[in-house]
Image 1 (cartoon, protein in one colour):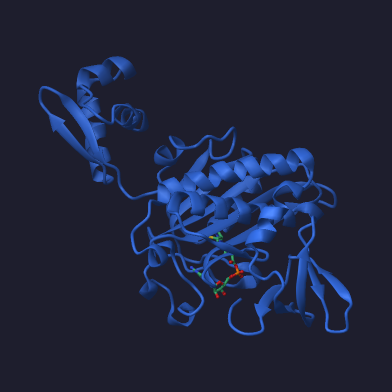
Image 2 (spheres, rainbow, N blue to C red; image 1 turned 30 degrees about the vertical axis):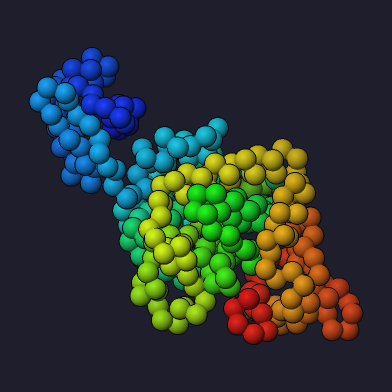
Length: 329
Ligand code: BT5
């Protein structure tokens, strides 16, 4: 009911909504409305009440509350069910627990803060309260498990598009899962799945974006390699609008991929943004290390590497790290 009252206030952003109007519309008593309005105020909404005119929403809090995001979604299924948490160890771990049972395809888990945000290969993702977007998208795509890596690539395209459109900042992609600005990391993507031999039970796409972080909120060792939208833009940005835009773009790209079985439609865009194209890089995994020049990214999402002896290797994104010979990219 609280969300519906909030929606009524949002529908009339320019004016006042009287208690009577809400009461008739939602079949709820005036006293109950007053209680819900007080709850909203305690959550950070600034609502003006005037005896004769009614209520007017002046300001919404800087939070990722589902009711805020949902009003900006244009999706058919993504984010229709959301789990919103003030704090969690990791949204991916939380999503995995849900996924072990039945879950609604397109569920989105969002948190204001992660105590143990996860990167790839057991690494950590720094996730300070209220400063970033930490979310996991829960999907059940009808694709072979071997195709899942492509979803990381399409996610990078969707997030890049959303950042450029809502924040007006040009970004690049560092294959396979980082979004960078001027050579510094702004966003990481962690795709995890539970699968049988030929069927995916669940796929979890974890997205972490540094939105309003200040440099001091990152550990000092990351200062040379990490940044945030606020640092780059010099102003605070609207997390809600960005998160909704990521979901809108993601669903478009995801549908295109699952319907055609191919990422051909956006691999060109990915390559154009890919900061390692043509660069000499080092590929590291737990079992090997190799150096070469990136010549292409295939339609399968693999990195095409030319080794010093002229031979060509195709690198699958899964369990490898990529380093430039100097610096982070
Ligand atoms: C990633 O791993 O970049 C994937 C990060 C995914 C985070 C999201 S948040 C929502 C969801 N829930 C989770 O628990 N995780 C996902 P990787 O490529 O391994 O990069 C990790 C490395 O990035 C670390 O070792 C640091 O060097 C660096 N790093 C850590 N936190 C950072 C931050 N906030 N900003 C920029 N760089 C960071």
